[in-house]
Image 1 (cartoon, rainbow, N blue to C red):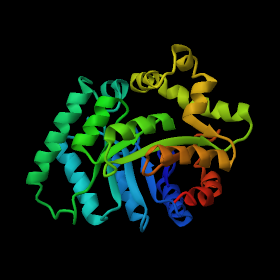
Image 2: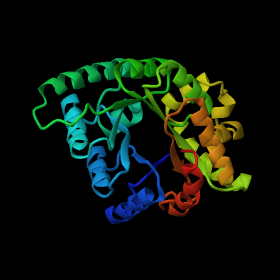
Image 3: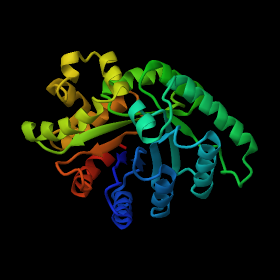
Image 4: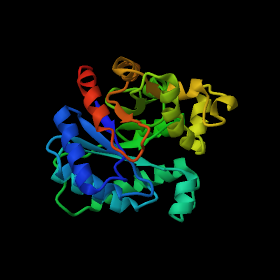
Length: 292
């Protein structure tokens, strides 16, 4: 079991304390993303240095943020210093972030990822620093069938986000071999009141309904225009965000594992987005650890 966390609004010392506690609670990994906040590899290096065994996953590093040589070098640097504790996830991100925040042209994302992986493979052949003891794995942020197929062919698996267990089952079928990792993120709200839980969940889901990549994937899963309108229908919100008591959260996580996930990164949502959900992490830990 892992945790998908948002640390950008916290000072470094608060993050250090939080990840140390996550490790003590028994979580196996912590996942962080990359958008317009902290730089991904710098943050990963800090998290690795502040813990002893916790695996740090990038979910995900944007391919537009650095060239293929820099990405390969960053991965190799961390994997050599912290063997078997760093998981690199690569993603094409979204047009709005790429064009408005970074000034790049967001064109042909599948082909861009394929070319980028070619570049990383070439970079591996000329990398001249001390190498990691074993080849470090790379995952792709993959939702649709073509990117999932590329993850099967050119990566060690996929990291999926904003998906229900039904998508995990479809992704496992495309990835096929169990040698390919499948690590979905699962958002949760530890709240039993339906109105309060859905209010928190909808605030989270509504942001992603402004990004075509996610909306297109939800349509492939059978959600309608009514489902993705106005912040998301109850049906959509309930499918994406598990809410209720500990048992309800565990049931949803188990559904991903039963559908073929190897590991699940749980993202706890609360009414105050600026605060870390440390109380909820503590409350969920014993039950989630029981899943193995």
